[in-house]
Length: 106
Image 1 (spheres, one colour):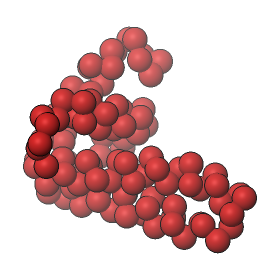
Image 2 (cartoon, one colour; image 1 turned 90 degrees about the vertical axis):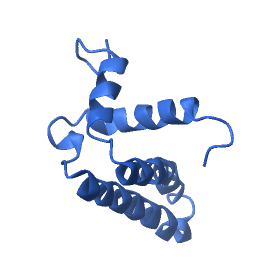
Image 3 (tube, one colour; image 1 turned 120 degrees about the horizontal axis):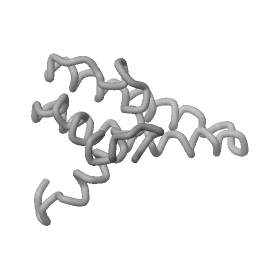
Image 4 (cartoon, one colour; image 1 turned 120 degrees about the vertical axis):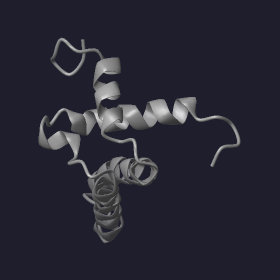
């Protein structure tokens, strides 16, 4: 059971993967997801170092641009438009992808 539903993480990731099959979309998400994730703690750091704010802001925007461009190639809307919980599934998908990536692969 994951994300307050009867579905497992594998179910969520499988459905997410079905709308992320185009190679360009997958590449865009492979770059965009970590940019967004890293930007979040950097936004928190701006409370202590205000001059830093352009960096996480740019990372966040560029990360989302990558994601949306990928969906143009996929010709499918982002999954989170039908269920907000897919915002969290994307990170799990990325982690699973990085875990299964063969050594030496680009």
